[in-house]
Length: 498
Image 1 (cartoon, rainbow, N blue to C red):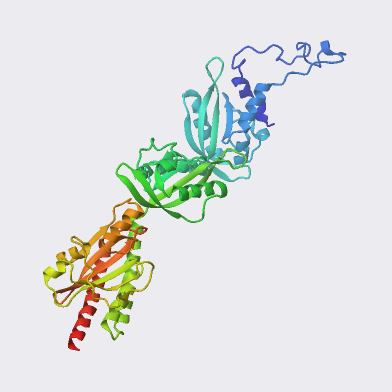
Image 2 (cartoon, rainbow, N blue to C red; image 1 turned 90 degrees about the vertical axis):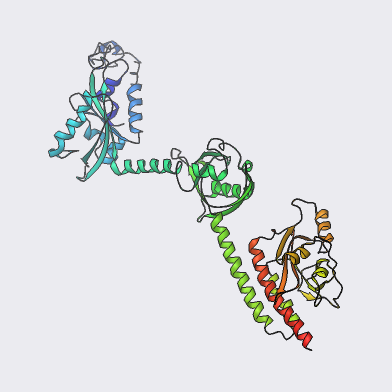
């Protein structure tokens, strides 16, 4: 136990004594006046004399002082050091035995040139209520200097008058690091440009910043304590698995991307979050005790969609380039047509149908569907290449309002899909009614035009497990249709010449 255990200021802080207060009975230390003193005459010759009671208040005070994270020293009213804890010893190197009893810091903890100013600013706290904050350059025992930030305040005796000063201090860089950490945490949890969510060990949000509350579609307080499954419709399993992994194994080395579907007041939204994770552990526990996970994320949906679109466009451009080069080597123009469609089909659709008009049809005949003839198609029951229909000369006989006939009427493209959420039998009936393969759920019909004439209709079909056709898909299909129409027109011209 250091000298701070029994120094004078502990008496000033004691419950039964203070500056000017009456002494305790027997505290004078005169033999014979304390009946419990084993050295007094009254105890001489006694077989057993009681042990003096320990000063539990002083021991408790000493233990508290030595257990503090901040360095602490205290002075009495005359400026004599009365307390010096272990953290002060760690920072400056002076032990409690070397520090307690010295008057001020002059010559040992402060340069003599600075000692008067430092002592005056510290002891000025006796005349001012509240805490006083200063920064001083103190001396270590090895002669090096250290800049410290101090907080000093007066100590009042039992009579209410100033009895001394206590001073808590820490190295300035450590204090600045602490302030920076607090400022950083407050900034992250307020106005950061990415989402910050603190999740407890039960995987429920406990703190949500403004960005995260907007991304999750709720208020900062309404989201607290709710399971993530109430906020995320799809993708919550992957997210929770990542949080569990961080709790068990620690943070991953790189950010992870999660596609999730959120339930909002406007409906369901699909978003992509680039996420990083930090395991939170209590700094007060002897062993790391997980407090939860810090989850930081940014919404990168727009970026990911742009990347996907760029990749899709790059792939489709490459496919068209390869298709044109392959078609240019075909002697038969209709063989070139099927080659073009095989390349166009990859990654774009599950089925393709080529319906051509009879040569020289009237507009009325085409609109009635009597003259559209199935010329080439992929297998209806399994994936396969696009092949010419053997002996194809039978009209398809589409019904009125069929998407292929609408494409002819509009001289453009038509997109359509089976009703969302329809049962498999209803979707199959929808496809069969339009004379398409039974697994078709999304269709894109585009007209074939060459030299100002309508040559037929090209139909791309997708199954229900794929997304519906969108506007970029239409542009690609029309590009393919233009090349197919040119080959079909060439085939008819060659046939007419023969």
